[in-house]
Image (cartoon, one colour):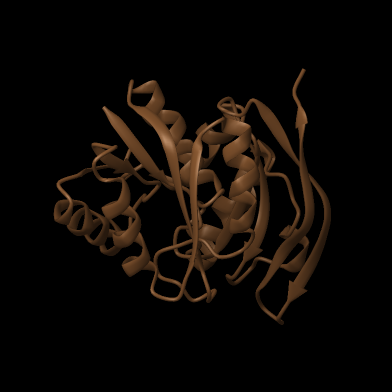
Length: 222
């Protein structure tokens, strides 16, 4: 069964692809939609343009669109490719709103929706992703207790205790599905090359901010 992945370049969508392939789905197409606003309810905001490089690193076909109306653009893309795929895979974890919306759109085109991360315990999921060999950079934070110093951090198992504390104190979702944390995958078992960030700029707005990559490249893996 052939799937297209809704791909933001972050840990959840990338790990969903990894799991779908372990479930013997063929995921050979990536769909990346760049919202024009950081307030998007559906799609990742910072550094989505780097999905072009990540798609090359995974040796997968890639469709990239910028959009104000993200769901309308998603419908247009699915209309273009619905005869080439059987469904989509997404990294949705706990948002019923997002999951129901995606399933509704899939039904419009006779497609299935695969959500391999659905209802997973967030902290354990982050641990599992790291232990599976994913190199994850934090590129956005927007939550109480998360400071500018998190931006650019490569997630380590030792960070999970702090995320657990922040969850207890402020209710932060350790996976960041509510927009508390945005990530960029630099390397993964499904990458044939590694993404290397060469230059970036940090934008900080008092209690939230982003790391915006201005220069990056792929390099070979040993």
